[in-house]
Image 1 (spheres, helix red, strand yellow):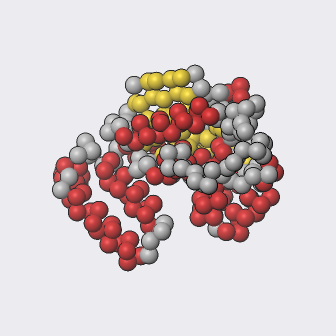
Image 2: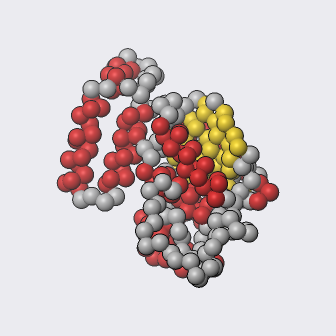
Image 3: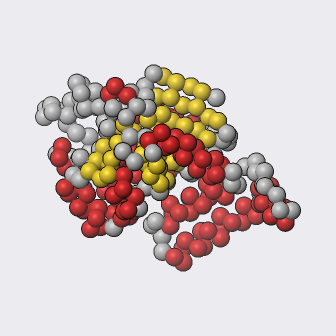
Length: 266
């Protein structure tokens, strides 16, 4: 299945959904319409039983250079001091929140550099594969803003407070090798191998029992805010329905019969 709307592409193949930012001439910066489309595609992929892993990538030399700040797009009205800012902001259906809360595993295939919102988006994915020429640019404070899309929550948890502070407070740009050394990405590969490497990883994820993979991600996410005793209790409760699944029976049978499992997500 393939669908497209000029600026964003989406296709599903071999249980892998791929969302591609397709504005190479604008460094894949994200417009307001693209934000809404991105959120919709994440929800669509997560709800699709045929999709067991999601790849997020870009076309051209950039993964995503951030939000489109030109003209009157996303920043429309921000400079008008006569406008009242609402005291209540609903972020439940914005891409960073959706990306964090969906159960389908996500892979950022960093075909090129990611800056600002693009960096936050990559960090919000479960796994990251990076081109050796790509960079991660935390250019927020240099623009007078903060990492607005999850970076202040994610980065300290990935690499610790001190290193995250240095990157965010100084607006540092990280090379691929620095990103790998810090553990921000899983693999660094040649530019022309990013897509292949990401798809191979996604297919390995998709070959496992999908309900178990999604439950594992859900438990990992919950564990970020739980003490150990509460967490193992919740894990045990999650195991009970999995024991009744067809995939559990298939997993055990394939192990005993020394063959590849054929999981159906049931």
